[in-house]
Image (cartoon, rainbow, N blue to C red; front, side):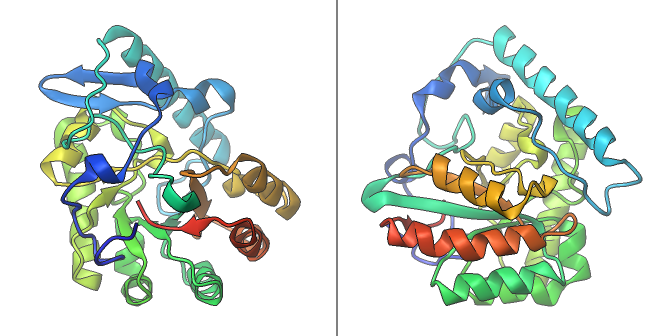
Length: 287
């Protein structure tokens, strides 16, 4: 199961047969204003907010970023409790993807917050060494700053996803601002690579009906994750490796980062887990 043009932002013709989302997230599925939406609840209740320092997003400290993500999680949980559930699968998707189709032990590796002049080339070298294809969730201002790196990712056959223009906390914004964040990032990616991204990842995994509706309008599939080793927090290479190897299952979407700070631990961990996962029979595909 591979896309006909990996890395080219191709919009799949039949996402229903190509992707599945766990029913366990049904409590987070919502429908509002004619546009359906989903929010991530399992990780919110099981772990600390998923956030990380991010250059270019203002003077906020790591602690401030944590507070923003926690507030976003609280809003998402409250929203899911107030709005009736809906579990329809045909596109337009009403929730983010947390898993891919697990045929042949397929898994997906996703790399967020780049491109970065130090770490993106290192990640690309590792992926080439092990013949792994990944999804790179790119921030518009970084793409504009390093268009040659975005082009290198595309040239290597990886998929590029929209990760907003400035890594904004989208549920705090008006609908017009959400539109601009996504549209501006698409413009930056298109200008640098000629690709119209068909995938979108919300910063902090913070989804809302407005965000899902905007994905539908801009013909993007919303993609979340199911394995988060918290590499952004630099917990140590052994911790990152152990988390990935312990939690990865067929269909898992793994979250890693090539931007947003010192990602040397991420690179080192990838150099360990990629051959191990391949040895265990996993096959890397893109959402």
